[in-house]
Image 1 (spheres, rainbow, N blue to C red):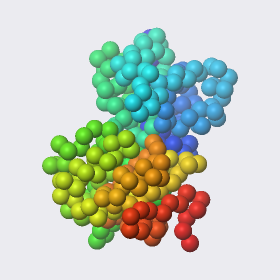
Image 2 (cartoon, one colour; image 1 turned 90 degrees about the horizontal axis):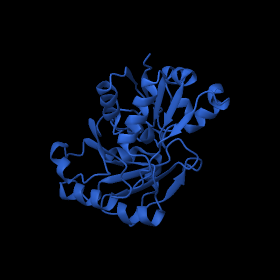
Image 3 (cartoon, rainbow, N blue to C red; image 1 turned 135 degrees about the vertical axis):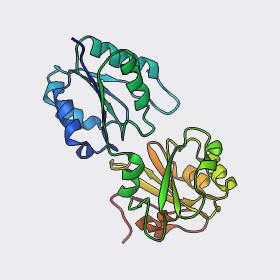
Length: 261
């Protein structure tokens, strides 16, 4: 009898932010296939995992280093399900927001494997919130766009509203930040547009770096900004408590436990 695959969004990393349904599925899974950004601490609380009854397959990817290719991940899901196992694919954030969830669903459907997506709290919205940044705010921003900073965004900006009332959120953007900032300015956004980089949202290393499009590449390099991080571009950044530390030529930094008075 064929098993089933559930793609479960684990949220931004805090184990408390997974959905009730996602947690229930993890507790009953035969196999768990986990990403690098999934809430791994949650696995240490599952009796079936601790007893060895439910194996955990690590398919985590680092920026620029993918030891397990996406095609192999697809095969792992299908093979376990065809062997009659119920598989939970635990992903960071939401499976359908720059998470390749669609590819994994397509692979299951093509193989005749039942599959279901359980939404998660996307880091694109929740991590800015952890830093006190609303993506929309009356009189400041009426909408937002989420882009992958892993790719060249130049060709995508034609479809993104360019006015000050529209926020841009970038995921996987640290490595290409200098080029992305340049592309946004070249696309019509002022160099003075506020930018925030929120590292390790909801984690022990959460830190917010604030700058502008014109200074963010230098500021990020000097601060040693690292993945995972979410980049927010737009006037909503000025609503963050961290923005009060922004100064000409750089930015002040506060950790999550060292907010300005």
